Image (tube, rainbow, N blue to C red):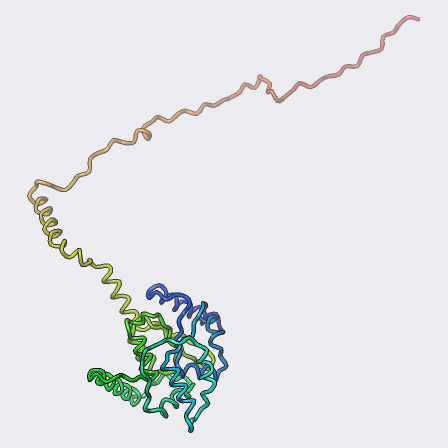
Length: 298
């Protein structure tokens, strides 16, 4: 992986760590589309994603995702081979979503999961169909009919609960699912562009939620609201006293100069030694004299 892309992933994860409390090991929630794309591009999720995310990673699937892959693998007239995806999904940690899996349109799901190439465009028909399915599920819930889920609804329900309180990183090739999850703050999204994993930038909902929480933190707390009227009256009383002259503005008193700065400068003593005085280091040179031989009478 290129250095710039690795730095970008590190920077985005740092944002989620600081603002939303993500920490290692990262919980990577994977759907069937991502498993099929990774299988096609020969990407080993368990081995390679800890290096990509620069930290320990736990691949996770829900019960609905595994049941959907198992159902597609058992179809008689299947368009793709899902046995490899089933074998890979079996080795991942299973999150108990508590949903009752049911998928009436198995052919559409098979086409969506087998379509491993990433696409950013979402057709209006797909979006309308999803909205229709969501309203039907909500109406069934209001009528006390037990809800049924496919993997798409399962992931939306798990992530939307308490704004991704489980701190999942969602890996999916479904652009419609990612578009829906952009509305939930604090959800990192990953998809594959051929063999290149791409971590999306934080959504506008994530930025807005963070700025709103910061503003609420900087404002007065609930217990401080009761003290605001008394503080207002206290400030008004102080301003009235200042206008009447009883308590004017404080004036600065004149201070004496620093006594240390007023001292006279000491004169430097020039220790000039006399030239006549020999220095201790200098010694007189020793002069040797030769004796002349004396003449004696023999």
